[in-house]
Image 1: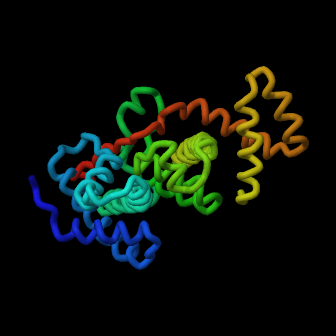
Image 2 (image 1 turned 60 degrees about the vertical axis):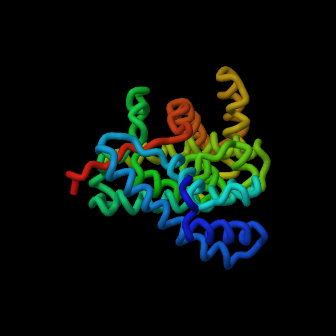
Length: 194
Length: 70
């Protein structure tokens, strides 16, 4: 068995403290999780060949497993962790895309796109930077709806977990998801025009 | 667009989704009244809802960028 690292031990304590309402613990936790996600993403990218897929939700889950001592975690802790990590994951992916030289507009690489299954299904390709821009726009109109997308898309939370993390009903999450999905689809389709 | 406008759109949009295609037209005429922009926005979202389908279904995966692009 791999021993838990010092970072993991610290993260577990911070996660518990944050769960108990300690906001300072969250501020300490964020850089730990951000570093872990960036490390995992870069390692994954170094290992895999270009053209393969990277699953943000899998990386968030891996970070949780690495940082949290599951014996000490409560069931709510995971939803809280993912709620925070999903946002960081989004930032990490955008940073990586931008560091590759991709600019805000005009030089959007088709290589940074969603699962090729999308293309096969006839759906337009989306990319990380465009999705990030559209989400930022949506967040300005409706922070909750943007968060629903973020939690489900980058965090992989289920409908019920998303509802728990946002303290709203599953029915609200379902409606937000349906509207936001169409809204983003429209936004990305409009932006794709040169 | 404003936050209130999006809420208004959301209400009518979900109501429209719950109706059959056959009923939608009459429903939108009534719900949007003379606000043609509102109607256009909702009709566009309904179209994109159909097109998006489950394409943003989760968990998503991202194709890695190639190192050669700079």
